[in-house]
Image (cartoon, rainbow over all chains, first blue to last red; front, side):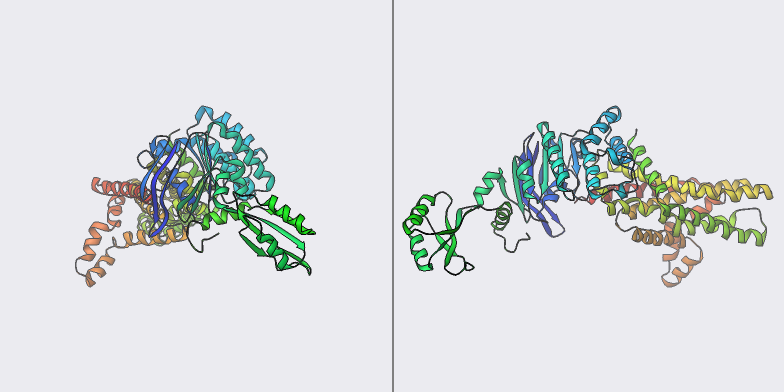
Length: 317
Length: 242
C-alpha cells in the first residue's frame, strides 16, 4: 500500500531523512517512533505529498507521490502535527468545508453523522474552533482526517494534548477502524504504539534504526537481564558466593544498603536463566533476604537504548 | 461544487469573520472620500478626476496590501497550508479561489465609494463616460495589485511583513509611473527613469483607461500581468515542496 525506496530529504543542507526504505501492507497499523526531530513528520509529509523527497521514490496505493499527487491525496486522511484548523470557523462549518473539498457530495450527511459520533464532537458543533479545548481541537482535526473514509490514515501524534480518558477513546477508535485500513501513526508515547500497532518503525537522526513487532524490538535491545538482590551479610561472602554462579557476568554493588546488609544487581545473558543456581546459593549460605526483584527494561529504557544504539552520540532523547 | 468556488466561498467568509477587514474597508472609503471632498469644495467641479488621481496610491500603499496580506500568510501561521495542499484539489484552483475571494472583497470596498458619483449626479451634470472608465480602470489596477499581493503573501508567514513588502512593491509601480519620479531617476542614471516609466510603471496604463481611452493594449497589460502573478504564486507553492 505504501512503499518508500531509498528516500532522502534535505532541508537546505540539513538532512532530515537519509536513505529510508520500508513498505506497509494493506490493513497494517504501523507505529512510527523516535525522538523529536528524528524525521517522523518529514516521512509523513512525503507520504501525504506535502513535501517532495530530495531523492528516492514513494508510492502510495500504486501512485507515485510526485507524478500523481491528487490520486494519492484522495486515498489519504491526514492529521498533521500542527493541528491545522481555522480558528474563526464553527466546528460544523469546518467539517462541511472539508466535506466539500473532499468531494463527498451525497455521502456527506452520512459520513458527517458518523464522524461526529466517532470523534465525540456533538457537544461543540456550534462552537468557534478557536475557543475549544486542546482535546476538542485535536478531535476536530481527527474528524477532518476521517470524514471521507480514507483507505490510508496518516496520523502525526494523534493523542498529544489529550487527557487519559480521551487517549483511550482515540486508541479504541483507531483499533476499530483498523480492520480495513492502513494506518501509520507517530508518537513518542511508547505504551501507545505497543497497544495499537502491529509493527514499529524506529527512526533516529533521519535513519530507520529498527523495524519489527514490539517483542522483536525488546529482544533486540536487551542482550542481558538482571536481578536485584540484597541480603544480610558481608560484601566479601556475598561476592564469592555469587561468583560461583554460572552465567553471572557482573555484579554491580548497591552502595546505599543499610549497615549489615549487602546487595547489588547481578547481570546475566538473556538466554540463560540463573534463578535455580541463585536459589541454591541462597539456601547454601542460609541468607536472610532483604529484597529480591527481577529487573525488566521499561519501554522508555529500551527506546532510549534503541535510539542510542544507532551509533550516534549525544542523541536527543 | 467547483473546486475554485469551494475555496472562494471559505476565503470570502474568512474576510467577514475578522474585524481587520472591516476596519481597512472603512479607512479606504473615508480616506478616498475625504481627499476627494477637499478638491470638490475647493474647485467645485462635478467630475472625479481628483478621486482617480489619488486612487492608485491609496490602493497600492494601503488597501490592496491589507486585503492580500492574509491570503497565504495566515495559512502558514495556522498551519492550514498543510491541510489545503494535501486536499485533492489542484494548487492552481486554490490560488485562484483565494485570489477571487480577495477580488470580491476589494469590489465591495470599491462599491463603497459609489456614493461620490451618485452625489455628483444629483448635484450637477457630470460626464458619465470618464467615471465608468475610471471605475473600470480601478478594477483592472486593483486586480493586478492583488495578484502581486497574493504572490508576495506566499513567501511570508507574517501578515505584517506581507503587507509592508506588497505596499513597497505596489507603491514603486505607482510612483515610477508618475511623471516627476522618472525625471528625477533620469537625472541620476540617464534612461533608467524613462525605461521604468514606459515599461514598469502602472499609472500610465491606468490613466489611459481612466481618461476614457479604453486602449486594448492597457487592458492586455493588466490582464496578462495579473494572470502571470497568479500563475507564479501557484508555481512558487509547488516549488516550496523541494
